[in-house]
Length: 263
Image 1 (cartoon, one colour):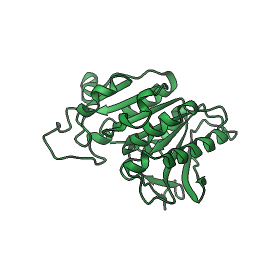
Image 2: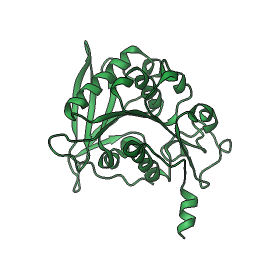
Image 3: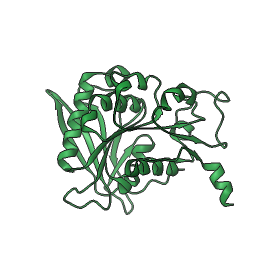
Image 4: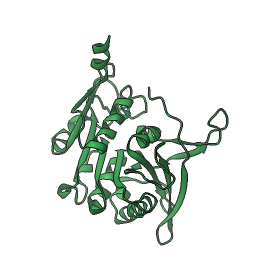
């Protein structure tokens, strides 16, 4: 189970992305980033599902008053990733869209919203490399906007990839680096659906025999499933950070094998 690190001081911005439309951008700096914003990398994240995120504040304990954000693994792990690479920015749905369905994620307006977020993080962190990361339906956003904005980006990370994300407009001709992270036991978006297309990019294959096999249970997209890399969260996020920092990543992550080798 992922042990969420308490976030450092985060900033919630509401930016105008298009005429008449605004969007929320949550900035999470790494603990080593100075007040001058000297982050080497900024990762813009997209949540899966309908793209919505829940934002609140903790009410008690040593972290009382700090932001508490609900979402998929990358969002929950945002501080740990920011500490390793520089900074993270979470992008929520715009004010004129209650949800981000796939049709919206494939639109020019969505690209404009992402472009506005890229501009903001580049202003906040001058000289930083900007990356797009999406899990599940969020991978559709990262793929489509990544292809459209690739001249402004360092790379794209696709996790638990939505079927069809590789077919979004312009993605076939993408020239910037792409990392794909997929679980063999994902019963929500099966590995077999993306394996052929993923092999053209850097692919990290995750497996864990402690989780159900595909076909043995009904579709499971929950936080406690292979779709969200349950049991392998720390290793998966470490691989993402390694790829951002070095351009390399392990081809395979198998938590059960790793556990047995140390016993």
